[in-house]
Length: 328
Figure (cartoon, rainbow, N blue to C red):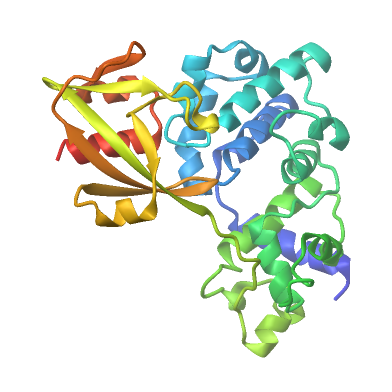
């Protein structure tokens, strides 16, 4: 099958089956580039269905690059609250300020300049070049990786390396509709070439797929293990209010309010009879025991908070989880 035929088949499928996503709405060229920038930051480590309502709310309240560059941090983080990985929001604002100041208020259409901006790496830069500027790039996200691994039946660690997967992208060739084509390939991975039970009968490149021929759809991946860390959260209560402190323990949540916490060993965690919660973070799995204490907490930096008012504050997900746990 010629590469031109592959691109035509994939685009034909996309034109008839793609999802209606808010960042794909008809917009001016400038709006489309802003929508692409915001959505790609949000989609880092977050699923599409989760991002949709956050994106719509964000664009409503922060409609363009100028507004993003000027927005105060509280409003920014409130718009981001619930998505997690708050460093993305901070980097997004830093990027907007640099674009306003150094790039004549226009998102740069040069991949190296994009990579120089905070929070933009290999994947995000290629996504912006393809989707925002209609340039012939194919971003290598998890969906595209899965298609390549199945089409070429890649199993060994060397075969599934990033370098080899980037080489294998040549399978797709190019299209004059680069923006649509990049989205079409990722969409095909999301809707057809699913991790479990792929819909091969709908796949426009089924006949090129070695996994389909072998009826072996298992996906090989490099083992990634987050560190497991154990913590004790000390919950001090005064009347109906709880003591929180500004975080200085986790760099990625700097200055957010958390319960007083300390790291403990696995043995102490296992032996505790207190309530427990588990939180998966980007860089670790947190296992937390909750130690409730009905006494005052002595600290000049503490804040008393009523659990009924937690939605008025920007709080990490594990702080909210602890609140919900102690309120049961």
